[in-house]
Length: 114
Length: 112
Image 1 (spheres, rainbow over the protein chains, first blue to last red):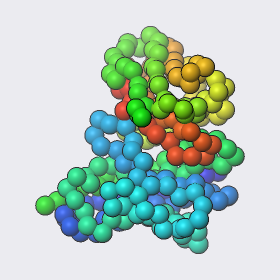
Image 2 (cartoon, chains in turn brown, red):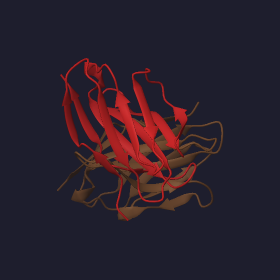
Image 3 (cartoon, each protein chain N blue to C red):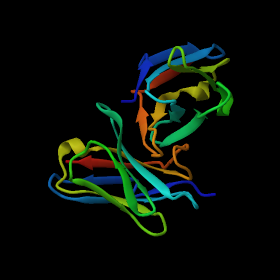
C-alpha cells in the first residue's frame, strides 16, 4: 500500500532563508509524486510533480523537489523564503494502475518571519 | 481556461439531513475526483469518476455517493448527515490517467 510521511507538521523560517519541507513515501511500484500548496480558505494548488525522467523537478514560485529512489524521499526546497510562501504544503503519491487517486501526507504548515 | 468550480462554497446543514455538492471540471477534463479534508483525518480520497463511471472509491460509508454527467460535471451526495461529516469537500479534475489533478476551492460543509 502506498503512504506518505511528512516530517514536521510546522516549520518556521526567516524571510530569505532556505525552505526545506520533508516528504518520504512508501510505494511498491514507481511512484507519481506531487507537492501541493494550500492557502487559507482555498483549494490546493499544484506546485510540481514527478512522474518519470529527470529526478530534479522545478515548479512554480521558485520551488523544486528531488526524487531520491534510494531514500524514498521527495523533499521540497526553495532557496529563499518569501512572506507570501506562508501556507500549508502537502506531499502526495499517485495510485498506480491508471487511477487518479492521491494519497496525501498530513501536511506541513510553513511560517515565514520577517 | 476557467478552473474547477464548486458550488455552493459554504453550507450549513442539520444532522440527519442530506446534501448535494456540485463540481464543474476544467473544460476537456474527463476525470473528476472528490476528497474530504478535516483537521483530524487530513485529506482523504472519496471517489473518482471518469466518463460517468466510478473508477475508484475510498474507505467511506455508503452514505457518501456520487455521480458524473455526460458533460463531466459531477455531484456528490451525503445522506443522513452526521456531525463528523463537517469538512471541506474538494473536487479535482484531471485530463489524464495518473496525471496531475487541479483542485477547486472546495465546499465548506458544517453539520449542526
